[in-house]
Image (tube, rainbow, N blue to C red):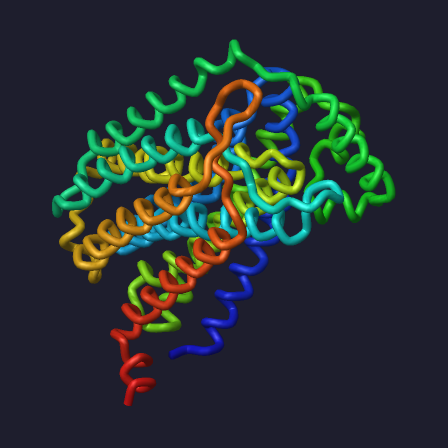
Length: 395
């Protein structure tokens, strides 16, 4: 094991997490304006679309760089692992953190015993996520991945996105005034930030437009700047994933599923946490699940389709340990997804004033969800070390 190379790669991953977090903050601020003020998306739709896409850009760029820049089949296996690991992180850790934060800290000074989520939102996003997973599992059952498989995954996301767009005309302005007050309070806190502070936090609205209130045009400019920064950062994240694998002497699959997945899930975590602490529980969860759908269908589907059209099919049998690892991964994904959906759907229900069924999720679910990811991480470490650490403990 090369400890020096490992420390360097971990340091690079830490820096990329910092940059991705703040770049996605700028992206998130602009996308929030577009979602709430320009396109009038109702709660649950905003999180599943514009926020989910914003927070999933790191997965898309990291997978693209792993496949195209390194032009390596082991790199593509690492790209699959990054998206799959991110999916587990998003589905287990992010809702778990949000539920625990809300039930322990409360919302806006008020104690909260249970988080109320629209059952229709959970069912909608959960079923599309399962559909995307089933398609991916079927494709990964082959030893060869072709361009049309990537196109099929993109097609699934197009159907999901189109379904969500039907809600545009039903925009909900119910909580807009309260949200605007929250934004004003946050803006006041930003006034003391000097030029260096704005620069190191990549606050593109402040740097380019002097912090003026967003317009549709300025929001799109900020989105493009943040996207370019995220893309450049993810190149170095992809390099760090490969470097850490070489330092540890394991296939890049293993470092991608932990290091790459955690780094690319930073924006999802902060966006969902902020939504939850504002009381936007549906957006908090739908951002995490919607990000998973985007990760599988677009972050994997788009690079796969482009690679297949340019270079030809991806032969998983030629990946270093990739075929066996990918088979394990697809089984673990479906089991974890079904378990998490069950944890959400099997809860006490009530109805809101609109007659919608609400799932009331308690603190216990937050602890269970967080524990799932701990076991997942231990499983990955065990596989990477061929269970040597467990054998030493038992002996």
